[in-house]
Amino acid sequence: MNHRKIFLLILGGILISLSSYANSCPGQKWATWSVPIVQEEIRKNEVIFLGEVLTSDGFNYSMRVIDVFKGEILSDTVYGSYKHKCYFPPLEGIWVVYSKFESTEKGLRLLGMSSLSRSLSHPLSNNIPLLPNPSEVIAARAAIKDDSVYKQVVNVMVEEVEAEEERKMLPVFLKNWMNEYAMLIAYRRGYSSRPESLPDKVQNITSYVALGLALVALVIALLKKY
Image (tube, rainbow, N blue to C red):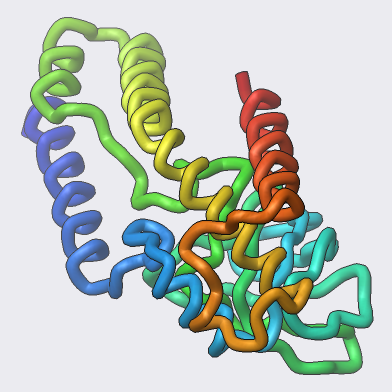
């Protein structure tokens, strides 16, 4: 079997695996963001906080607690283990976390994460990995005989696909997070005693300041990548 056939088999297997992965997993709530979803997540989760990933090996992770919106976290650091096949483990950067936790001898342990939990520093990392157009990859393989050069070209293709996808998703991602941040601040400050009565639009100056701070924090984190 020649190299091209082997490559096509491998590529096909990857695409089938990703398709099965996507079809067998429930939707990630941040991807279908809405005010009712945030209200429901605020209601049902014990703790909601911003955290910075300190360590992560793809399974076990630890986070430094930056800001708490709901619950009482009497520790600067929490840890957890990621066992869900449908979602990706926390990597570097800032995360918003919706969860429950328990106290252990080691410290506060997160009991999984709601699918509204996500990376704010690396929005695209929340997605299923993207692949370039298979026809372009096949054309590159046919035109480039040197394996090392071919791998470099494919890596560039992947980076271009990811960059384009991130450019398309960032405006909506930013808008959703700003609204969500305002809702979390409103909940913490007791503007509403019930999550379901949180307003769709925050109309007081304090919440607009919170929106601005959230936007600045996220933009600064994103600019560090470019």
